[in-house]
Image (cartoon, rainbow, N blue to C red; front, side, top):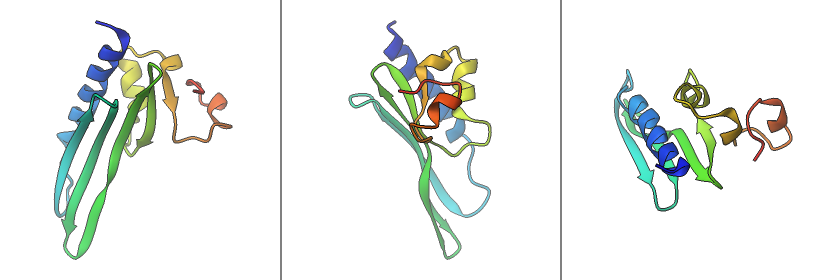
Amino acid sequence: MDTVAHYRDLIKQVIRGHAKYKPAFGDVRTETIFDQAQDHYELTQAGWDGLRRIEGTVIHIDIINSKIWIQHDGTEYGVARELEELGVPRHDIVLAFHAPSKRPFTGYAVS
């Protein structure tokens, strides 16, 4: 299996793991979005908690130039850490939610 295909499988595994957890409040639907053709992967939530609208992205990851770009990470533990534990090297993970000028200080790939 090539590296990108392996990364796709790992990303889906991580997102599916988080999708198992349902919000403690309200009537909120959790959705996984896997677009392999464009290499976009997301976990989103939408619904209502009483009169309050709940809608947003929990995790957003792209594969760009054979690297994993974490665009948004709304998890407590950290998706990058989970991917590392599954064997993805730090030099193949970009914390895209950090400004490019800050990325050299993260210990992960810059681009």
